[in-house]
Length: 627
Image 1 (cartoon, rainbow, N blue to C red):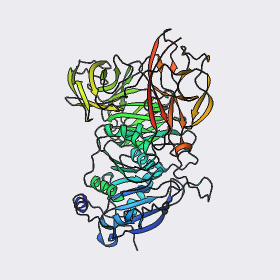
Image 2 (image 1 turned 135 degrees about the vertical axis):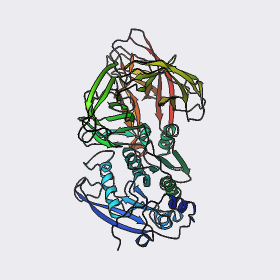
Image 3 (image 1 turned 45 degrees about the vertical axis):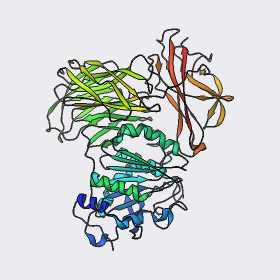
Image 4 (image 1 turned 180 degrees about the vertical axis):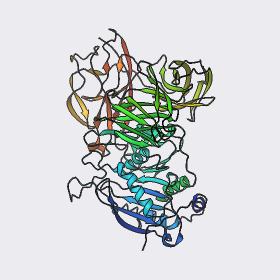
């Protein structure tokens, strides 16, 4: 009988050679056990299936672990008909039993079963899209990890722990790994949904993986796509961001429908990651949907009771950027939320530490002296507005944003000129610093590759020039770094394909018009708030509608015009059309009351056109005067 065993061990070198010398044959098979444990998080018995190497009982070895999250309609011990990835002849025998049968690996299939009432056989797992119960599966994950590590001979560290999953489980694999980068060092996603409604019951949010890419700092990630997959469009959209912002992301497309092709190739990806795990990043980012969370030893608590995201950026022992938003990256700030951010035990108990707070809205600066608690931790109290926070005495340079010059957005294949804003969030002046701009992104020409940041007194900022050209006509983001002595500061800039101007559009300011909803159903819809005259008036909230046949599609807008507040957006859910959980986004910009009459607004409108499984994206330039 298999029992839990204790002891510690390392397999890095041996593991590497096990991967290199794998035969690739699918003859051997793993030990497959279906087990239960008592969950304190869910206050109930939970099931799981575990795959153990054939010699587990006698080897004495410790093993890395991949946690696999099943898809819709499946359970820990049930796969979809014709797509058995556990064992058997499906996928020509390329499955978990075969792989674990020939490799030093443990695979754990957790159970996403989420009955809404006792005893209900409910096929929708994980309490996502919609959030119907209080079961929060991401909060359960650390408990399951602790249990597996205590019960089986695992290598119990993040470097030897990964996640994987199919479809809805692929979404969960990405979400869980991004929430716990301190527990997981590799993540794979078999054709996972890109978006779902998730989070606390009562105030859930729309969570899109393409907007969470920086949660994966210090992690290797892999996306598995299918030529015949019904949601392939969303995978390509996700990769348009991840391919250029994540240094350790890969994807592969198989001739396959929705499923798990290439199990062995993807498990080998994890094995290579275990053999050479990425270190904890020295500077990291994190976005979280929960009011309270912990990551990399930092504890964050808010009193938020409405949908939103807590955003931490460029976090290190010397400080961070923080805010709370309705959506990311640029949603309305939830300024009234109270936030408490507690560091790891960096300090001596009772040590006084300098903390400098810069509120970016108005540049207000506060210099504080805070005492570390009995554990050597420091707690910083903030609200939900945007802050640059410096910790410790001395100069402290941060890159706090950018402003595009001579254009309302950055366009691919055209020179982009902008000014990057650097701020000193320390309590001593910075010296003049020469920085050079660098990027790992292919197809980006740096037209102004260096700049000098002048000396900055505490709390002061300076704008320095940056110029580049994206040679790829379809690029959607560029990631650069300002690199100087003891400085490497990241900057991400959205870019957009070149688009033609159109005069054929409507402005909805309380107008009722026929608008597409749910991808292809036309409804009489009232969008915006105002006098309904079809013009943009100062103080009104509007929508831009592009015609299609006898109806309109509401657009997502992009512009840097100071008269236009783009922090409000709504969603047109397409789940009934393509069965994904994703949505098209609609901007509801506010025309600022201070905007001068006859001011000309220039904006880029984006609409999503249904053509499953390969939807289309259309861009148009629109111009209108403020009345």
